[in-house]
Image 1 (spheres, rainbow, N blue to C red):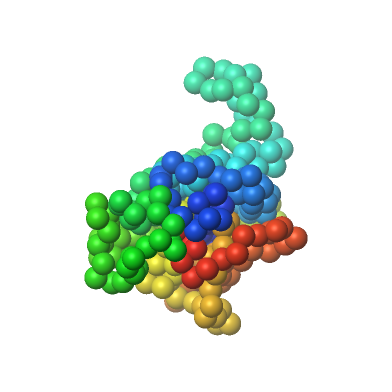
Image 2: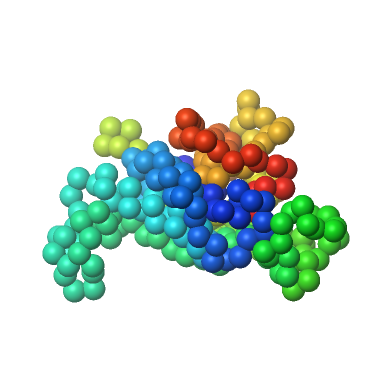
Length: 247
């Protein structure tokens, strides 16, 4: 069982280092990144996708869902014929693939700072005791992401119970994809996960559409086996990334 933790594709606000709104769309480069990570994960055995409700995450999740559908050898008859309760989309995945949107996975709420460039901030909005006006404190954010992780674990265990472990011959074991945000990914790794031997978090960069793979170790503990991988972005012209450029 693998959980694929994916950061959303780039937005113009990412590239310009501006704190984002929930409805910020992907940039042209972000769309290409989403397509690339989607192709990477198309044959990974993903049977369920959880996504933040922010537009940039949903767009990335939809790209992954579409790629999985295109890799399926036989779309369902209802999907192809546009039967009752379905849309005639030949690229849509079978009904066994679920995409669920959950606000608990959204990025930290920076309140009235949304739309403000990092360079124009007069204070450290990431300080532990700082509460953005109309936004979310560090404590509230951490509590929410702790609940989000419980949701992710529950879904992963349900997938295991429904689909078994796989035999390695008929394809990969059923997997779960989680599409979220830079601060969410960082908090999950730092507060809720172990690191497999050889995984070094020093200097980690949560680039857009980076993929983190999470599996259980021999003691049944969830651990990171691949951290913030961007191999699928090789050859792309990427925007500079600062220590604050992951929101």
